[in-house]
Length: 113
Length: 115
Image 1 (cartoon, rainbow over the protein chains, first blue to last red):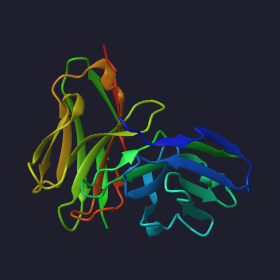
Image 2 (cartoon, rainbow over the protein chains, first blue to last red):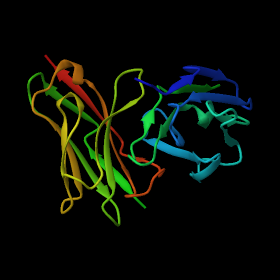
Image 3 (spheres, rainbow over the protein chains, first blue to last red):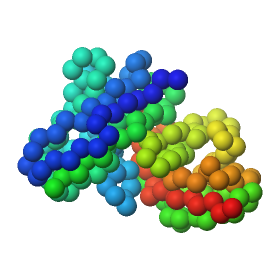
Image 4 (cartoon, helix red, strand yellow):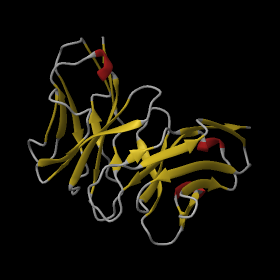
């Protein structure tokens, strides 16, 4: 059964550094998403992506964040200058749209020191 | 704006007992509703979904949920808990009939199953 994959599983970075989190969605998905979960808090929506552009973003998704689908398979989340409060589990998800559910990857745990 | 409330951040059940996880939503129109499960060190796996068809929805692993519009609820049940059901469970909503919309999650309920 196809799965969403994410790399790396754990990323440790210093404050102010750039990080890129990578996701490979299921091949025929049309909609792509990033969510994050700060330890002990709710899973929060960051951004959705469709037809090679952002379709919706949350207040969290400020100018420090960007997404890209550079080659039709990978879907990346970039944080330009990480802050301590960016430490969280980041989940990638995808879906076809017509059936409305989203399929999640295993997550990348980002630790900013 | 939509929101989800899960009553009880932790639930402890005995093996073989009923599992009942509560989810209430707030939305201007009846939303689409989902239950996801997260096993340790894994991602979110879809258990079941309600998308305006039958109000009683059956999912994987023996779970089911009932959409009750009058109570704005979508509680998750399983008649007989198994040790493998120990996990965290998330209720989520999205706007109806709108492909590609974001999910709004509840705070999650961690289930402990006692032998």
